[in-house]
Length: 104
Image 1 (cartoon, one colour):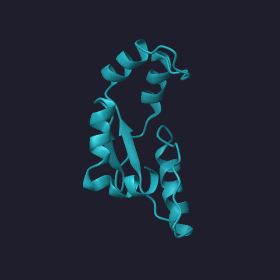
Image 2 (cartoon, rainbow, N blue to C red):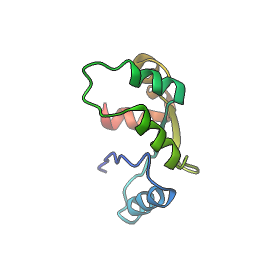
Image 3 (cartoon, helix red, strand yellow):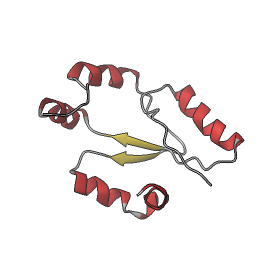
């Protein structure tokens, strides 16, 4: 079984369902993770960036939040509010075992 990661985090609910349906049609495993960072933490990180190639700005974050469709059903939510070490520890938990096994 091959896996891939698709960046659809800020797409519509319909796009999210389309990806899951496509995986089902192809007989592939579909593990959906919604990485979520609270607004105040995300904005602080954006303001404190230096030497980062990302083009993220406070305005881009606001637009993303305006169109984001928080997932339901099979999606697992991964909080990215913490430090890299804390997020890594969350990924190390049992519910993300498939992610560690296939991508780390």
